[in-house]
Length: 92
Image 1 (cartoon, rainbow, N blue to C red):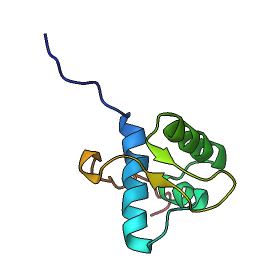
Image 2 (image 1 turned 135 degrees about the vertical axis):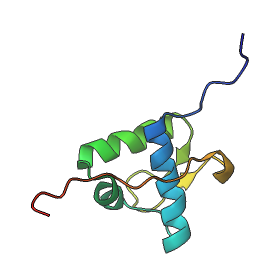
Image 3 (image 1 turned 90 degrees about the vertical axis):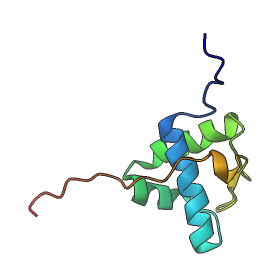
Image 4 (image 1 turned 90 degrees about the horizontal axis):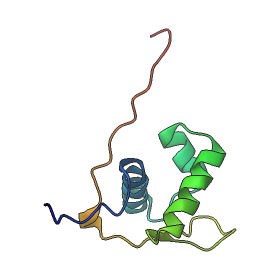
């Protein structure tokens, strides 16, 4: 029997956490929900639901209704590598 601990977050959640970490390093401020939408190519409700889920799990903290206040509560060593998003470019 393996006694490995279960992961603290899913693969998708890990990518959102890695994005927060990388974005914050590059821009010296936390990403806005629109930044997630642009990178992950998802809808506003999908981003908001993920942010709420990450906060509920204690993986991030934020100030509700105030932009760019997301703070990671996970050490960078625990984060996966941020992967590029695969897109289809019709007509190219």
